[in-house]
Length: 122
Image 1 (cartoon, helix red, strand yellow):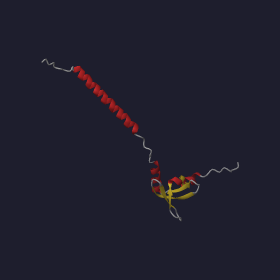
Image 2: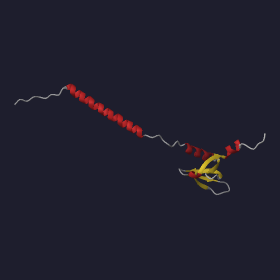
Image 3: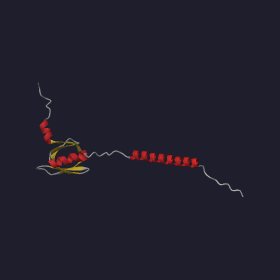
Image 4: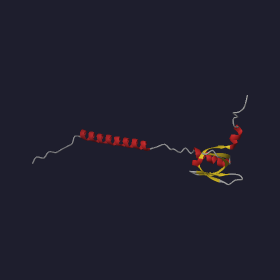
C-alpha cells in the first residue's frame, strides 16, 4: 500500500489564522458599536435637587404659583420625586404635588426687582 503523507503548507495556515483574527476583530468592533449605541445620556441633571436643597438650607421664603394661578407663600421643608412640603406661617403646612406647580420664585427677588408699572403717564 502506498500511503502519501499530507502536509499542510505553512503559508496556508498563516492565511487561515490571519483570516480568523480579522473576523474576530470585526466581531469585536461590531459589538463595541452596538454597546455604544445602547448607551443613552443621563436625563437627570440634578439641578432641581440642588435648587431645592439650597432653598431649604437658607429657609428662603418662596412663592409657589399653581397651574390655575393661585399663589401660596412659604418655606420648603422637604421634597421628593413627586411633591414638596411647604411650611407656612399662621397657616397649615401643605404637601404640594409638583405636577400642579406652574412655577415658583423667591419672594425676596420679587420684592427687590419690583413689578414694572405699565400705566405710568409721562
